[in-house]
Image 1 (tube, rainbow, N blue to C red):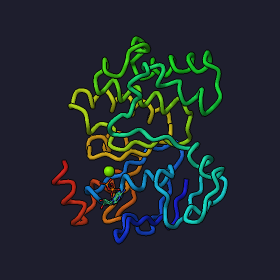
Image 2 (image 1 turned 180 degrees about the horizontal axis):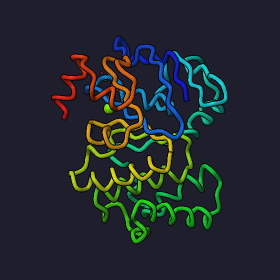
Image 3 (image 1 turned 180 degrees about the vertical axis):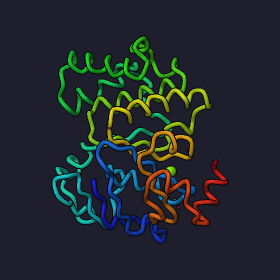
Length: 242
Ligand code: ADP
Ligand code: MG
């Protein structure tokens, strides 16, 4: 996926200022940067949860001008390519784990219930929750809820999985369960874009580290380049966070 000139303002505030970014297929891209640097906004623009003011998104079939007026069909097409996993899980409380995982495939993809449930059970097993299919979210730990959210995202079979601080609402041991699932997905060469504050995660899982500051890409390179960079702002960030 290639993003070109993505700009997003909120009133006077420039949240993203002409961001160019190539997101490689089959790789894990980690987005780092100070709070307010535009990481969430960038993820949300990829998914059109935020409508950019200007820019283009190319998902592989040619650049689409996302700054202009978008037809509902184009919006659906771009949205269908990626799925977002949020910090706060956002499960439907009135549905079981399996119900959460099967809802969108049935409603949005038109799958039969039997097919969606078979896939849903496989995906719950994949995230280590085979025995929790019938549990409601309030009976699950935060780490389990987040793993259901990941299974739900996988059920849409997206080209790009977008994670916005997927572990920052979790205690360390529960975060570790979620990191293990993400690491396993990265091993399968899925395309992941992960916003995180965890340098350990970046070190362990990232193929690429993109550092944002004030709505700009300050650095885009290998994890090694990020961790060795002598740039004062990157050094300070590593010291404060790490
Ligand atoms: P990050 O995820 O890196 O912490 P965000 O993308 O959430 O940063 O925010 C980037 C900037 O845009 C911040 O200054 C934030 O306050 C502002 N912002 C984000 N969303 C909105 C919104 N819906 N309305 C107004 N300002 C927003
Ligand atoms: Mg954010």
